[in-house]
Amino acid sequence: MARTPEDEARAPSEPAAATRSRSVAGLLRRSIGGIGTLARKLAVMVALLLLVLVCVRAWLSTQGPPLHPWQTIVPKEASADAIAHDDWRAYVRAEDAMFAQLQRKLDSKLEPRERTQLNRYYSGSRVSPARFDRDWNHSFVLEPQGAPRGVVVLLHGLTDSPYSMRSLATLYRERGFVALVPRMPGHGTVPAALTREGRKEWYAAVEMAMREARRHAKGRLPIHLVGYSNGGALALLHVLKRVEHGEPAGVERIVLLSPMVEVNRFARYAGLAGIPAYFSRYAKSAWLDLLPEFNPFKYNSFPVRAARESYLVTADLHAALAKVAGSQRAANLPPILAFQSVVDDTVAARAVMTRLLDAWPAVGSELVLFDVNRSRVIAPMLRTTATDWSRDALQASRRYTLTVVGVASDENADAIARSRAAGANAIVAQPIGLRYPVDVYSLSHIALPFAEDDPLYGNRDAQRGILQLGAIAVRGERNALMVSQDNLGRLSYNPFHAWMLGRIAEHIVEP
Image 1 (cartoon, rainbow, N blue to C red):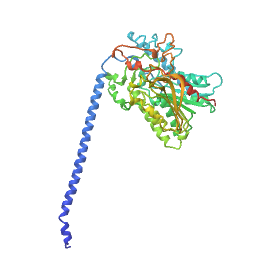
Image 2 (cartoon, rainbow, N blue to C red):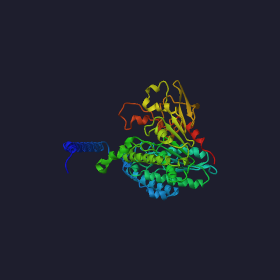
Image 3 (cartoon, rainbow, N blue to C red):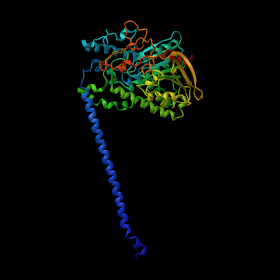
Image 4 (cartoon, rainbow, N blue to C red):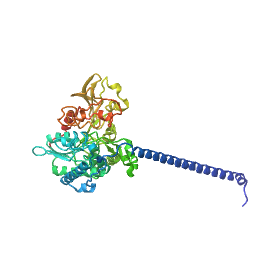
């Protein structure tokens, strides 16, 4: 076929177009290759950095004294599957047997230098659990006088023990409730137990305790679920999972103290810190803290695995919240009464508002925030980045009641509860009949469950023969103590505890 003039005009341009196309393709290939090379270099750099950090971590773990028996002896507890099939009585029997066996092992392993007045594992010490009217490390039940009017299950926090639920359990018993306080697996024994036990066993223990609560309730009594710190996350998860699967919530109310809704982001990667522990020479790298054990009902030492498990609990909680919030079953959730310190070095305080209650349905919930002491003397020393958010919290109307407890003014230490009811425009201020202690600038994560006269964590009315940790005030030079001064100065009791109990009691109603 003869070529037209138009064909002749186009012919020279076709090779040029093909050349440009090949050039663009080559440029793309080189760009992609460059990006791939950069990504590989970055991956190598990250891997080398992690290797260096792991090596440094391994070297640091070889420094200092060796591990103590309570950091090496791991009690043998029931598996999650076994707990799931146990009833309360079987769980307590197995617990008692485990404690007896552990005590025999500890007695045979303790060296003379470890038999001191500040070692909870030495029976003759001032901090031995035997000093108290009972060993509150064990699961316990408080029965009311007369016919029960309800049942409550109370869940303690991470590294804690049933002791922390003693005050609230007593409150419920006085109002006619059977109070069930299970010991979470891995707790109340030795810190090494948390190198094995984790969230699966905790979930099973909560389910076991709730079965016991339903047995007592017999389908006609109200059931409350109370959770402190990690126990708060476990309580929420239990209810959310039931609702997610189309079951009734199973409880009439949830009460939370310092709930673990969100933890430090480091916890997500805490497992990396324990990698060297796979080699026995570096066993101490399995621990984030190795401290003297002078607290009879709480661990001071903290294993890496516990930090990782706490993060995984919150991850499960966030997933369950998202599933239920996006379903038609959210209206089946019970109301929450939550108490939280505005500053909290263990959990994210704001997350109780933003990640939990802002996503919870309008079912009559309330969040109580304990504000910092904004007196004229203390306020200038506060970090505004950590404390000012509570001032803004009351400015917006929410689907739940928000209450902030703080000083009346910078010149008046009388405590005022400022509340904004769900959907309301007005803020109502009411005195609570207490004063913000002049020597306290804030509450702490660990303070909320304990009264000022608590025999262990309080600061007054100490019982003879018991070392009251909350009253210890030590002064001296820095870097001389095995325990940080920050830990010793952390508030361990709640100056507003009586008021808090009164608020909880308002919701303990007869069926």
